[in-house]
Amino acid sequence: MSSDAPPASSPAAADKRRSGRRALRIFLFAIGVGVLAAILAVVGWRPVAANLEMIGWWFPVLVLLYAFVELAFAYGWKVIIGRRRDGPVTFAETFAAYLASSSVNYFTAVGGEPIRASLLAGKIGYSRALATATVHRHAEMTSQFIYLLLGAGLTLAHFHLPALLRWAALGSLVLFGAVILWMTIALRRGAFGALLDRVARGPLKSLARFRTAAGKLDERIGEIYQRRQEHFLESVAWCFPGWCGGILETYIIMRLLSPKAGFFEAVAVETLAMLVNTALFFIPARIGTAEGVRAALWVMVGFTAAQGIAYGLVRRAREIVWLIPGVVVLLKRHVLDIRHMQLTTGPGLAEESQ
Image (tube, rainbow, N blue to C red; front, side):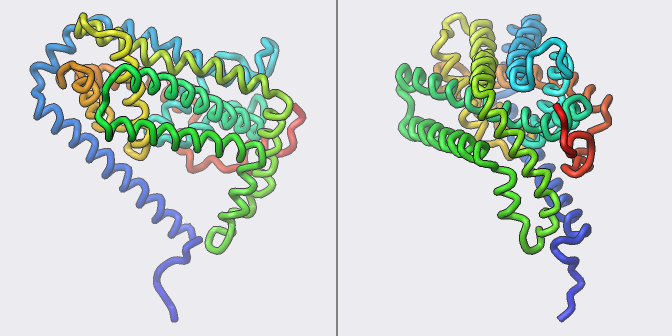
């Protein structure tokens, strides 16, 4: 029996899947914009604007303060790459690649690590660069879990939260912890090769051609964990103050909008917002949902919805400002279309001598 439909492994089918994912992202983004518009319509723009005016010229200060957050995360990656001043990768190059990957992850939640590897492939080889980026992502998430565990503990001890929110926070922490545990075990055992062996079957059997590259990547990652475990732990330590920077930013904004705001309110809003928004990673840039979650949490700790929305908009504006340097790096290196990045091309996939 014949069929006009293309085989599942054909280029036409792949293009169709990509088009479907792109349409879904556009749809979710439109939904998010609609949610944000609805929130502003309910609360009213005038009280939100009045709170934005109270922040005023503090906004550039908040943007500059966030530089220390980005620097902390980037240095956590540099520790894994190697800190020698005469090494093949400078901290400036590491920082630029990190900002570029952050710009990609802002909209897609994944995909930034291959961007980082491509940008540093000419210096240390693609497989080594991707290995360091993967281990850094693990360190980043591990430090985030520690941060959330401490923040949620302070929040649950200090505030009488609704039972549903309390259990939701605890459930999110357990799930996050399970993910970290799985990553810890899988990356040490060769996650990429094992994953490829599982999926390279049937219509996806063409992926088997990446098996050698995946094995090389697993080998590079294993070397980091086996021979330089202390560098992974140091990376976790450097990433931790990066996550804490959000509390400082939240505290400053809260004090500007309400003198009665305190440290525990800032911890509660930042921690719970991160837990909820992490679960909403499938919303592009978390547009609308991030602002709605933050506004609800501000109300929960005793402030107004207009103050919460103003806070959310300031955070959004700061995020957009910090996207610019990453986008500039991407434009300069001509890697905006990540579909052309393949494990079988580019420097670093052959055996490297570094």
